Structure formats: C-alpha cells, structure tokens
Length: 172
Image (cartoon, rainbow, N blue to C red; front, side):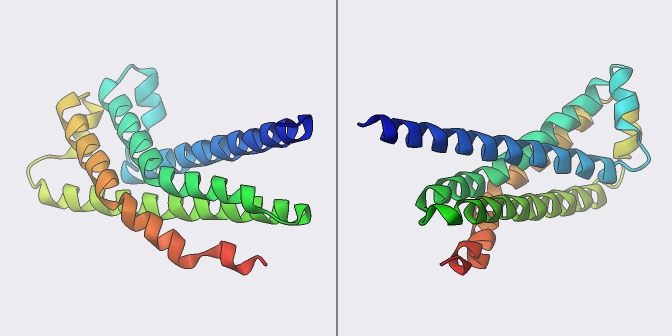
C-alpha cells in the first residue's frame, strides 16, 4: 500500500467517523425530543436532576431504540460515500448520506411515537406519566421494553423505506 493509499484510506475513515458521530448525535437529539413529546406534562430534565431513575430508564429506552433503528441506514449511507467519483461529488454524497440518516431518524421517531401511543391506550388502568413522576421503575422498564422491541421489529422496514427513496440514484 502506498502512502497516498494509506492517507486516502485514513481520510475516508475520518469521514466515516464524522458521519457516524453526526448520525448518533442527531438520533439522540430527536429521540429525546420524542420522549419530551410523549411525556409532555412531565419535565424529564427536572426529574433526572432529582434522581428519578424511572425517567432515566425511559431515556435509555428511547436512545437505544432510535440508535438500533438508524444503524443499518447510517452504515450503508456512510459506506456509499466511498463510491464517490469524481472527487467533486464527495460533498454531494456526504450530504445525501446525512439526509438518508435524517430520514431514518424521522421514520424511527414516528414508529416509536406510534408504539408509545398504542401502548398507552392498551394500558387502561396505568397512568404512565404519573407513575414515571412517582419513580415507578417497573412502568419505565415496561415502556422501554416496548420501545426497544418495536425498534428491533421495524428496523428492516425503516431501512427499506429509506432505500426505496434512494437519493443516491439522483447523483450521476
């Protein structure tokens, strides 16, 4: 391997790292905003500062769920960056990769929001937000399990939806 090939490979690895970090940060940001919308009457940050483990458990469930759902799209989009030819297309590929990840996050947040709403309707005798405010970890674990389970079940469909849009095909 020549020095130029090593430098190019290292530069691409840095780009992968950058896009991966951006993807993760966006995912966590939107995931936590989802949590905020799901629990509109509950101030999660205030509860965390008080040491409410139940709310912290919900945070963990949302973060894991979103990251699980965007991982395949983020990985394939990041790998597509390597295919840019000519070099002038690099930034266009980078933008398209980030848009694909954003679409995956959007679909993921929508899936989690729907699953939370359905679960809320099916648990007639449990007031989830009141239980979270009281620090009921059992309820937080149940909700987190629903969200994480949903993530594992719909990840493939989210990847298919983003692939169906196929923004990379627009670049020639």
